[in-house]
View (tube, rainbow, N blue to C red):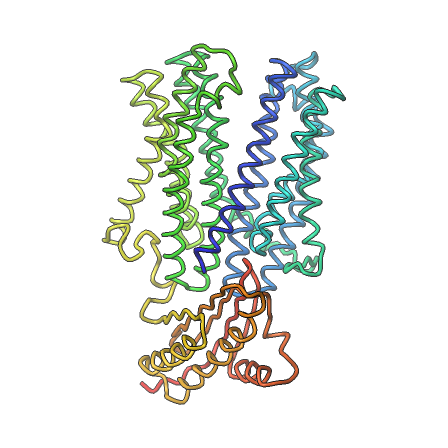
Length: 583
């Protein structure tokens, strides 16, 4: 079930990351080919402001993934709604404030960016900022709502919103340069309108009664806002390390190859950012899934998830690497149509960049999982050393022997060094090889139940259910539970699992899967049911009559606590039953 879910999430996340990066790539290409060199300079001068807006949105989106995946894992709909409400209120207030500030102070900001106080460069820089800033409420809002859409399992809507944004951005860019001649203001405005298109498509779900999240002003709290910011701190480290690396490599390249090498690096960065869509998708899945599974204390689920992400990292990283190596000349020619030294360096740089794709994806999956499992400092350290220290060190050392060519190894060498450092840290921390018994998870024993205290049951048929019921009863008795209490727990599994198999599985004539986890919490037992059938909440919507209604009522009556939440296209039911230990 987890592997199927990861595939669905990964496709949506990679596609969304790819289309967003392609929007920026296409903007850059259209500006260069239709508006000239001075317009490219204006775009570059305005870039720090655009990056700052994107950084704030990305930080809050990461905070949403961390905070709300934890509350979903705990089965708390109220806490999840608090995160949803706080994220919307915070994003709205912050984006409107930033928009007004840039609109009011656009002239001094353009001057501070190096555009001067008047002239064509000043006007184009200012115009692009004004046009782009109008869409900031939508662009930041889209970043915030994206993880909620993923948690709700609405990948089709997510893909539609991203594709709508991409198509409208390209179409409006071309209309601007070919029909309206709106210059750089028109380019910025085209981007803004495309963000609003994405918001309109996505908001259809969030405004519907089917939406699993509910906004309430009462649920907007300082505590939750603070949690959102804290969860986004590692994302700030990641972005800061990118800025540091760019600065250091620019200085190094100026010394080894001059301005031509810096220009080649600019092209390499643009292509590399688009290629990194696979690591972005893998990291996003890792962050969300780890938050849910870790807070469910699902050790086996975490291991299955990471092993699947490792396989995907190898396959996708290899595929992207081959594309970069084979088509590097074609990609570079989009930016540099004329042959020359800059183009030659850029092609070599892109091909050497390809060597870092596999370790980069693995590092991202591990780094994001550590952020949710209580190792935030480790996440920040990996972001810093993997994003700046090791790549810069590798570029500096190799440039001493190979000149500018040595600098192009920065990404591949830096990511391999980072992966080696992570493996060494795991070995020193756990005393185990990284790939043995889930050592790579670096789980603290006091934060998750041990394997001996958990029984995992996978059920697809009534026959498997009957075996599972017997296994659960025997497991409880082996843990010192009284015979009466063990039978009661087994009966609870039989009633809930039987209802799912008989009524949930046949509805759409598709193969389905039910997983049941039995957790021994010493003073209580926790049953967790997860199935991939259509949404059904047995806690609040019990059938009024019939044997099934009686069975569900009986199971719920035996529980001290119950919680249900529908997320990631899965029903998640948790029942807590009292323990009666005999020894």
